[in-house]
Image (cartoon, rainbow, N blue to C red; front, side, top):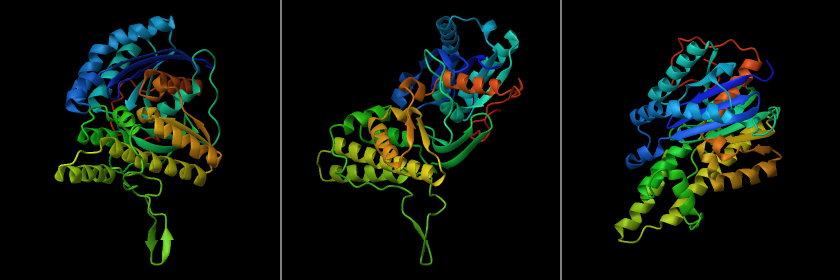
Length: 357
């Protein structure tokens, strides 16, 4: 089946996403976010997110079907995020997908959320999308994930090259924004404040960037392609405390700009190095932090200098959405992959190498 019509369901965190694709042509991408319900808590509350998915699912599904001009009986398959993500939120989407698949007699594909972020780069609004370039890597940066992947095939060959060992980059943004009094979500707030600050005002640490030494020999260490942001967040807190202890105004803009520069510096440097060392000549940027202006700017500059082709999908397709799930589902259907069982369960820590559950 070269151009399967696939409905995709995404409920891994706080966005209820329903997308519909025909092969690589995007027909609908509807998203309902519960972000405003989490603002007073300064972060996503899993129980609130799960309840919001239950309330938003049916109207979002109806809107997507109307936008695409199709009915449920027209689709060839239903794809749903099976993991990773918040367990309760995932269960809502999977339960809904099972019900729809059973009622309509359609095959069900439980897919990997991270790989779906890559698959969405194939789709276009008004034309057939382009195939995945050979030697492709993906840098996925969000509130829950920070990974660099090697993509040999979207259907059967994905390798994790590096990841965060503590806070994800987006999580570090949220925590730092909270301590600077900038509110939630932290990414847009820090990005905005940083525009008025000096990114070189403070020299904050770049975690896991120093080489290791074994005797007198220099070694890249086991974390060569991994990230760590918890120390950076602590460094910002200590800097702010020093101003407060002296009764001085905290230079929020300078702290935000310096923090952001530290994050994007290490993200981009390690991503480009991983591409070079693994012979990868194309890089996709995905995840909610892909909206960050400084990250996009510096990554584009460093990829150009290294001869790496950079792809950044439109912002609505970078953040969590149903179109990316449908896109991966369409690739699996086209490849003749066996459908998932209707008994699949949510897996909040689904490894990226497991594309189909």
